[in-house]
Length: 161
Image 1: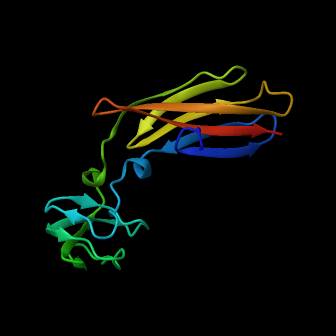
Image 2: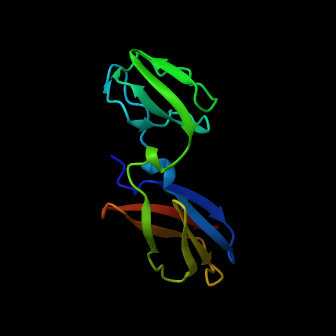
């Protein structure tokens, strides 16, 4: 079992690195097309498993088909999925389980973290590894608080070599 926070990313860098790191929480918070044969109520909004640039509103309730459909990629067009009819619409927060309200990055010994910010659903920080003098792994841990009050933890493992 993987005990790492999700999302988890790795980055290989040289001593002296100063760079911006970000975790885009949008993908983690997306409501994806459900498994085949699931009942979907009208008004539910999902994103396909592979991005199309659109999200899809359930216009006609029913059961999803045996496989994910070939999604329409024109605004307002309909995709038939079993007995469900999905309407393509521009991507919005409607297809997210929640949104990011705030973000904190845990301090890391030997690393200077500055400029922590949230841009839409992306948590951003600048990390300065200039004090690193030997090969070491540093974990940049990001905790976001969502508007529904829950928290999520993600991490960048920066490997200085």
